[in-house]
Image 1 (cartoon, helix red, strand yellow):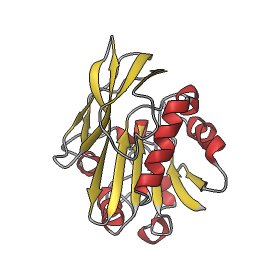
Image 2 (tube, one colour; image 1 turned 180 degrees about the vertical axis):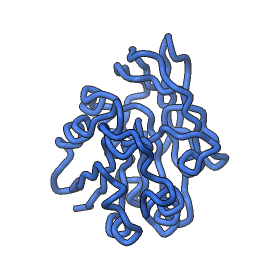
Image 3 (cartoon, rainbow, N blue to C red; image 1 turned 120 degrees about the horizontal axis):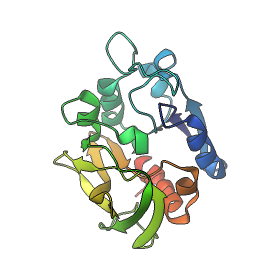
Image 4 (tube, rainbow, N blue to C red; image 1 turned 60 degrees about the vertical axis):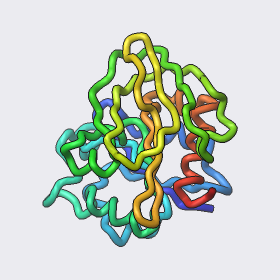
Length: 217
């Protein structure tokens, strides 16, 4: 069983969505440890105890506290500590709110993308574009109803996995992978609602992503 550290809970992205979404996957393969107020819990030594970090929160302490948490003087673990963790062999999977970064910020540079907003929740088509262990066994196209993140990949070393398309949001980068040092990183933009997390194809992508980030080929 692999212990997965799950960072969740930020404005407009309550922890309950992530907790309910991951509940069906709790078992022999994965055990999830949920952290909401990360600023008072995480240290470099503590995150090193987990082979995979699943980040589903933006730069806010909690849903009720919009103050930033990964900044100098606020927390002991921020983008540079996450980068060191991955380079040392850790896995890092950023989903939905965890993909909200700007290319000129340390977190945006870590995950390698620029978030530019989203239209109101709408129908979104997910289109697999890359052959990879994460997309193996996932249908080539599937439909979800979600916040359609408008995202541009900024990392030169990123390998795209899938794109997302909607009438109101156009065509966007939806998922990609990177390797940093000895570790692996995956970024996936869908995941605003429990229904998305329960969707068979999305769940397959998620499980494949966790396995790949943990080092499985």
